[in-house]
Length: 193
Image (cartoon, rainbow, N blue to C red; front, side, top):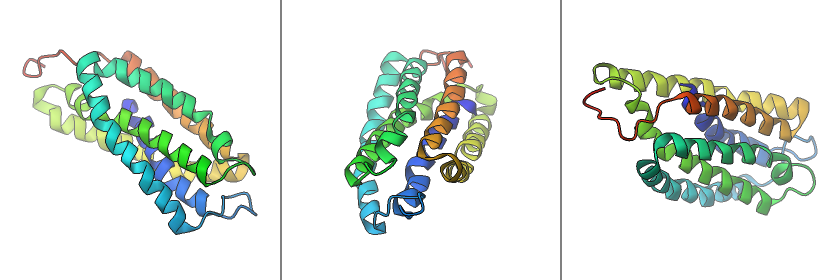
């Protein structure tokens, strides 16, 4: 469950939360005042990077191992967590910096999502594989996704936009710790598990 938590946190921050922040009022400090349709267009451009990087990451995970790719992607996500204020904060944020934020976030999302379809089922023995991976997948979506927009909105209102990045950082470090502790499953015989 914890292995996938950062994946969902990132996804909901760069889809749900950032939309409300992007169209929110700049005068109140709760947004960038980008018109709704323009913001959706930025998101539509970035979604293609998500799509493009899923097979790239899946191929890399098959070649080099799920664990090593997830460790590398988690480190990218740690770096991304430091960019929130630079790309979304203050008077220097504009549609271009938001597009960069969305594109980088969606590319990282594709890189983390690619190996996940193999990682979760490979963690469980055949007799409980579907149940185990289903529970882990949905529990991580609740812990990583369902609460992320609420926490991010509260952090923004009370501590500024970079605090949302620090939230992603903490969740990513938890997931990274879980990935480091998990066994590599790339070469495992699935019928023997």
